[in-house]
Image 1 (spheres, rainbow, N blue to C red):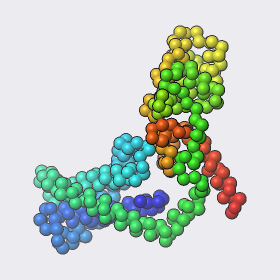
Image 2: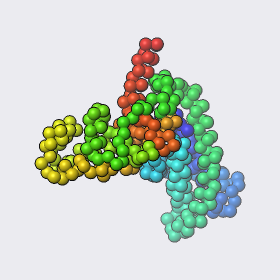
Image 3: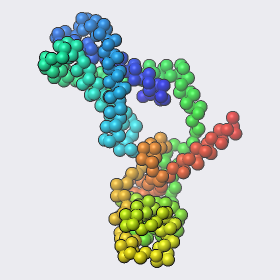
Image 4: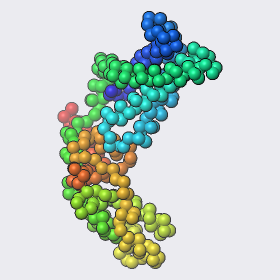
Length: 323
């Protein structure tokens, strides 16, 4: 896989060039029944136009659409390799559709024969293109771009700019003494814990220690705002609660509700043995500030964005002093 932006661009151009050439030969072979020298010769001479059309489809439609579908289908904690495979598979599907349409039009023009030609060529093209792309073209393109990137120093420059955090997994940087609230607690109990511990959110656990929810000060404020209570921040809420300044019965009732009634029940968690890169993806994609850490489903700690930020700053200072 590409290791930086420059390698990513080169990877797309090389992979598309090979696949479009193969697709052109396959389309000719399906029409004539001969995937021999004539097919590869035809593909060579028709390749320039096919490549231009293919790259436009790839860059403008296939790649953005594949990434968008992957982001909707894959969870943020899925491993990067599975996300990469998903994107490549979707790109093969879309590129095969577009290049088969192109081949059918080139062969039959804009006619009903082109429609018939598309449906006759697509199953064969896809069956052949998928294993070729996944098993041969993508790995070969990766080797080429890695060799070019190493020769040009693209990856070395990126490594020099990246500070070493001296941590490998989430367990190395997580906060082990995490504050929690039980799933049987009230909203008032959760708010009290956040106030006493000076935190903005905390996991909700059941009697076995499994994470079943997450509640934050934003969840509390959002619910009070829905009831038209003029609360601008958590400190205003706490002060008013301490003074008993809740004139409307619904506000007091909300504080006594079960905390799960306002909490996020679909909780994003990370494993204790997850890499730092994986948890950074979670923070980056979802804009979370804090994520529970689990081991065999049980809460073992919490990691927040501030932990990683501090480690990064420390590493930058250490690298600066040693330079």
